[in-house]
Image (cartoon, rainbow, N blue to C red):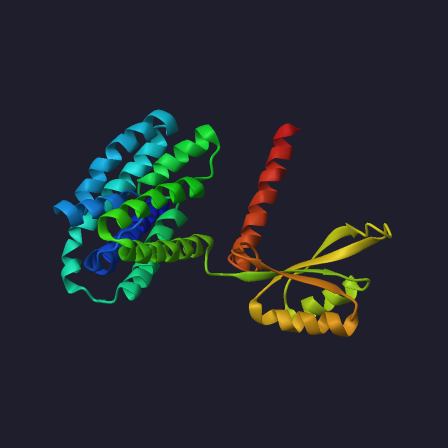
Amino acid sequence: MQGKVLRYGLILFGCLISSAAINLFLVPNNLLSGGISGIAISCYYLFGLPIGTQMLIYNLPLLFAAYKTMGKAYTIDVIFGTVLFSLCIDGLQFLEAYNVVDDPMLAAIYGGVFTGIGYGIIFRVNGNSGGFDIVAAIAKKYYSLNMGGVIFAFNCVIMVLAAMLFGIKPAMFTLISMFVCSLVTDKVVAGFNNKKTIILISDKTVDIADEIIKEVGRGVTFLKGEGAFTHQEKKVIFVVVNLTQIAKIKIIANIIDPMAFMIVLSANEVMGRGFTLPRDKIDKMIKDRKEKEHLAAFIKK
């Protein structure tokens, strides 16, 4: 129950951030956003219709399609996010009067950053604010199309319409905002605890691993490898480290084996022992698992 309350609270928080960004940065500078909200903002500029109310109306046939194709549980989740986002957009419309940034370029960048943060929070807890995400999910289910590609195609259509209605300049600024928004959304969803993965091949992997454990304080995993030319079996070092620890591992490898082959890769999100879970919690999980295994073995007997 507590987990559900936290999840819905985060969806609300994400909706508030994105809605505030749209009303503070995009609307006062005649910019659009992607998806259904972009269509609603266009109609707001042309006819003065409330953005949030429009979004709710435009989402109704999409929600019906989601119910028919994706099921009741998915649709209920989407309805919550859709209604919440629509209410937040209209509820925060008063922010439009402040016009905190009067430069279209800055408005596009800041609008993209903060809408991206809001969407990222929503998607990080597996929420949904409706719109083209529903269409993309249906397209993926029935036609195996990439969701990102489907959404991008719809947004391209919106950009063409924006250029025809409001001129090429606002459309280009909107494109910048959408690009920034997508980058920030991905960053928030993936997490900010970026680490580096090191794969190291050497004839002295045991010595290098011992020094990494001793000097750097990181756990090391040995992977089994075999040279394709020599067919010689090798132990491959696999280790995840912080950015600041890479230089120390390079020095260790260079001292022990100057011929060591080392690859450094980015790890967008790392979870588990030594990174996101405290040691006492991990030990408890291991203990609980062992107790369950013993109980299962006893019942079998």
